Every structure is written in structure tokens, then in C-alpha cells.
Length: 594
Image 1 (cartoon, one colour):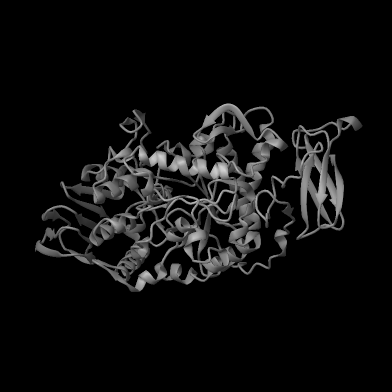
Image 2 (image 1 turned 45 degrees about the vertical axis):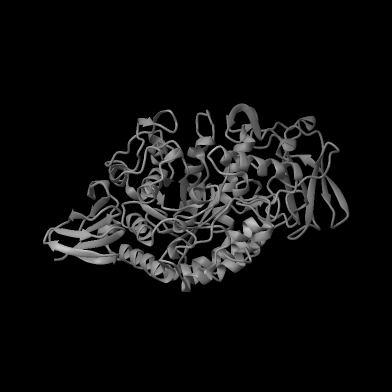
């Protein structure tokens, strides 16, 4: 027996298609005004049917008012892709072995962002399980999966999802995600899932046929906005909030990363993010384990992580791109585009202590004043997730090149040391830990030729305006673009020019281990951070530790008396009791003894 339910407030009749059973069944309104039944906001537009012969593995689709059969907006399983029938998935079939898993607080955990389709050559969740021991040995604590929601085609980044309840068929489907999370928990690793509610992909998006999922009252960079505050928005909000809760409940996910929340335009008395935060908090109490919510926000506004009762959004944490931009520009010298206000040691020193470069001051790239400052008495460093590489900052370059392809190993080591000894929650991007040279490029496999060509031409035009020749921009639709982006695990044992991949991996492991074993490095109070700098060097003090980096000419860097090196990359010499000299592209983590 399976209960089929559909929200379709504008439909006059709904037919359930069961191709495997060679049957069609009508759905009936849960509250039918024609029968004198008064609908509530929760039941208005809901259709229902019970089918005794249906169960796990049964294919089905819905046809509205005589139209073509369409997949379920809440389908958990699309084995043949976004245009085909849905399949019933019974989440309770999995025999979980993580009963002793206590959960993991996302604040302060070492994150590791990976894309299932390129983390291994096979590109599946089951294949990724085989690499979990590498992550355990590295010392990371929280795996962050790029979106797994069903999208058009067999390969892509996942940010064009249209089946937000389903797990992409090429990754192994919903059962594979349960196996992956179970295996991760068994090795002491938490799992964070990237989810996208601010827009949906164009191919296979049938939501408009079912209800008012979109509104033209607002716009986003991707077109019309998801309907969060217009007529009929109660059903859309329920669709989103229920999706959040099911990842935690049915898949034992520990944390969600919410994509581009600044594009969730909502003028309702209770913002959708506040509703998600409060419902997640309630579920966390019920499940007796921490559940995290991390926002990607371009607003540079800490109200995202402030309590709902005080006017905030109540989220656990938020991404902080300003720290990435500051570190990246400092070690690479890039100051084009949105890096224009970054690149100096003074800017890096500021963000290491104050989180934001733009906190109410003028943003040249945006052409306006931007952001709000943090308050050390209200905000903690672990509420901000930082990275020196991530899918956006690598993948949205024209050729998807990583810093390891262009800068000296000493500068890669310096970036890692700054990140992993900072006051923030650090996040690595897959392969970063050994200085992977494989690019991570933008790739798609849209089934519509017109859409595929539009994406191809749009990508070339975008980077052409920045000086790249069209032939230099990889074709997103080409299989070779995805294949070039797959991690080459054999690099770990290689030396490429000056880059010793094994040595870089040991550097990351040692930094993460030192962080985990040192209370001073786990203290996330902004008041406990002191930063000094010169033109090409910076020294960050965290309790008894000082991280010193030199990417310029030789410079004397003042440190605490009695400090001794704990970790070094490059050349460092002691000048006197209070001064050390680092050669160019060198970094050291020092500690006061006694």
C-alpha cells in the first residue's frame, strides 16, 4: 500500500499513471468544496489516492487536466532522469548502522567540499565510500557534498536541479546516499549537503504545471523568483521546509549548506530562512543530535547567524568569501574583477580579525557601500566558514584552474596555514590537500540541444568580455570537460616540478592535527586574535601560537619571545629572542613555550 499525495491547487482533475501496473487511478481532493468540505491552508489543493498494489519500486506519474504525465514534484527517485516517471522510495527500508552516531556540530569542524561526479573516476556515491579513509587520515570532520538533487543529463555541477527531493540517478539514487552517510558516520565523519532553493534549472522543470511555484513579483540573477510570499506561497514554502527536514530525518544528514540565500526574496512576516531555522531546531531536539544550517550569502551581514527572536535568520553559520578573496589575492597578486579591493597584507590582516573586508564601506566591484560589521561580543569565528579554494572560486574561472597550477608551493602552504590556524571554520576543496593540478571546470549534459548551445555560447561570451579567447573556454557539454575535472589520485605519489604532492599532503595533515590538539587554535573568540603585517608578510597571533608568512622580499617578523617553530615550510632562521627571518614563500607556525 502506498499513499500518493500531490499539491496542485489549480487542477480540476488529477490522474495517477502507474505504467508498471498498467493502471490509471484518479486522485481526489483531500478537502473537496463540491462535497461541502471546507479546506484549510494545509489541505487546500491537496489531492490523494491509496493504491494497495503500489510500494517501493513502483513507477508513477501525475497527469493534470488531461495533460501529459509528469514526475512528482516531491519524487525521491528518478531512475531514468528528469523527464521520466518517478519511482516510489521507501526511506525506512535501509537498516541504519549509525545508532551510536552522536552527531557533529558544524561550527569549528574541518569541512571538505567534494563533487560526487568528479571525486572518483566512477562518479558515484558508492565509489566515494572507498575514499573515506583518506579523509579520516587527513583529519577532516565534515564532508560537504555539492548538490545531489536530480538535474538534467548524466553529469553537471548540480546547481540546475529540478527534482529537489530526488538523488541524482547517475550518483546511485537515494539508496546510495543512505549508504554513503551511514558509511561516513561509521568512520566518524559528518555529512553536509548543499541544497538549492533560490532557483531551479530550466530543463525538466515542470513545477509551473502543478502550482504557483514561481512569481514575477521578484527577480533573481536566474530569472523569476521562487514564490515565497505571493498568492499560493504556503504550498511552496511547505515544499521547501519539508525538503529540509527530510534530508535530516530520512538520510541522517548532519548539516545543510543553503545556496545563495540572498536570492530567497521573501517579504513575509516570517522569512523562509527563519522558518527553516526554527523547524530545524525543533527536529534537532527530537533527534537528539545537532543539525547545522550554513548560508551562502553575498550580503556580508551577520544577521544571518543571529537569533530569530532578535530579528536574525537563526542559521548556524555562513560562508565568508571576503576571507577567501583576501588570502587568494595576497598569494596570487590577482586584483581583477571582484578581487579589486583585496590583495594587500593590510586587507588580509583586517579580515582575519573582523571577518569582512566590506562591512559598510565602499565596494568598488559593486559600485556601492556594502555589508555590516560583526560584533565580537555577539559573533564567534566558528560561525564563519572560509576556504582558500572551493567549487565557485575554482570552477567559475574560465579554465577552472586551481592556484596550484600557477603559484609556488610555498604560497599554497602559506594559504593553508592561514586558513587552518585562523579563528574561522575551515573548508578544503577536494584535492587541495595534495596540491591537485587537475582543473575543475564547468560542465553540463543538458538534453535540450537549444539549451546546451545557449549555455556554451553564454559561457564563451562571459569570459570573452574578460579577455579570454573563445577557444580557450572549455565546452561545458563536452565529456572531455568533465573528464579533465576528475581528481587524479595518483598525483599523491608524484613530484611535478617544484610541487611535491606527498609533502603538501603531509603539511595539511600536520596543520589539521595541530589545530585539533591545540585549545588556543580552537578558541573562536575574535578578541583573542592579533595580527601584524608588513608589505609582503603577515603574523597572526592566536594565544600561544603565531602563524608567520612571507611572500615578499626577506623581512624580519616580530613574534612572541620564546617562540619555537612547530611547523615550517621553506626557510626560517632565528635572529634573536623576538625576531625570526623567513625567506620568500615561506611560512611557519610558532608557539611560545612554557
